[in-house]
Amino acid sequence: MNAFTGVFDRAGSTLGMMDDLQVAVHTYDGCARGCPGCLVDKHFKNDARFRPILPPSDLSIVHSRVSEYFDWVRATLNTKGDGYFGKEGYKVEHFSYTFRFGNHAELPLDSLEEIAAAMPCENRVFSTGPTEDVAKFAELRKRQPGRYFLEIIMDPLVDSGEAIRDMILEMRRNGILGYPEILLTRRMLDAFTPERFVDHLAPLGNIGAQVQFGRYSPSRTRGFASSQMLPVDEEVEWLARFAALVVERGYDMHPIPLGEYAVTLLDEYGEMAARGADGRVAEERLPEPTPFDARIVREKTRDILLTSLYVDHNLDLFVWSESMGQHVLDSNLGFKPLGNIRQRSIQDIVCEPGGGIDRMLSGIVRELVTHPKCSGCRYKSFCASHAVPLFRKWHPDDGRHCYGYLPVIREFQKDVAFLDNMVEGFKKLGF
Ligand code: SF4
Image (tube, rainbow, N blue to C red; front, side, top):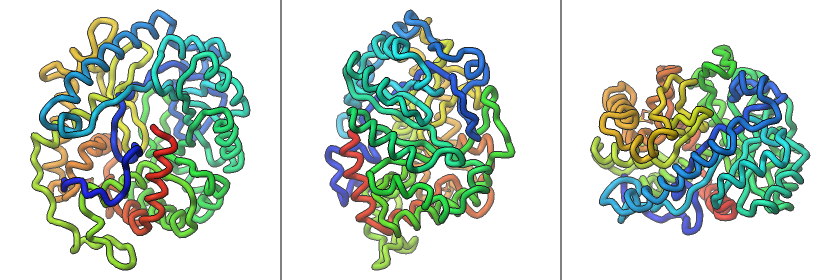
């Protein structure tokens, strides 16, 4: 990686940088909807409606372990010599809880309060479906003060752009921020050309909304349908056209994660110097890449894995990978628990020599240096931190494109003003 070149004014913006210990917790899975690519566990979806999954005693265990771990993270990760975090690197400043995966708007207010009261922190995120009952979360915020965010699972075949815009505006009037999340599935791409989809999202195109895209991935307990998986080439080409149209129309919208990656590569990988007059980043103008140092890449990736965790309903601990979608790397995706936090502290589990984190890191680095597409590629360190190799366990990217989604990133890189607006948008979101 090249030195931070500072072409964007990112002070106060969290775009493309981590400063948060983020812990997702499996608190509710009820939902009446049937989105393709549904993320909720079938058992909890159908048999545990309208009540939280975790009792207050378990929530207390989670909070006590996370609080203790947060102290360890600040004392250890923020002060070490190298890695993503450290004396010279980024710092973990706070921690947040993300309550997943069902429609938490279905829970009674008292149950939401039970969760929020047991899990005090600066930023709390609840997953929901689109709901008109924003007042419930506004009341929750009054009862348990703090910053609240809603991640709204949007099914574009059912939900209009207007409905999501109205919900976000109502949330903002009540001091709550949030964004829609959209899963790319066969059903969605069959229903929408990029042109139609940009039209569909037009109501969100002038309110500075983040819109998060995710890749569909297999799941054991969540009704996985292999027929919904998309070939990587088709997904990349669809998204590249979508990106070009969003930029062309000058939407005040922040598509993540790929718009975010466009900033990181321009800013931290020196790619601004490779842009021509037409905004196109030309491969032949790219700066000489920094040689791949497996030890450094491993350290940086380790820091990212250690600050993005998931606790399931058994209090088993897993990594939560934020890449093209927010995937918890749990048994649904074929990963064994790193450990159980009823029995051991989080720091003990994640630091275990030869444990789950070590094995995951070895797998990521080995895959990147040996894979025919990645071994000679300049973006290995970037893709390591986004756990790219893990996607290949489920679906190969053996066509024209790869999980780096570079053609999409290149479209966003053409318009620096669009990306600047994203940087500003992240400042307002503050998270
Ligand atoms: S996934 Fe693609 S962009 Fe990433 S390292 Fe491999 S070849 Fe390069």
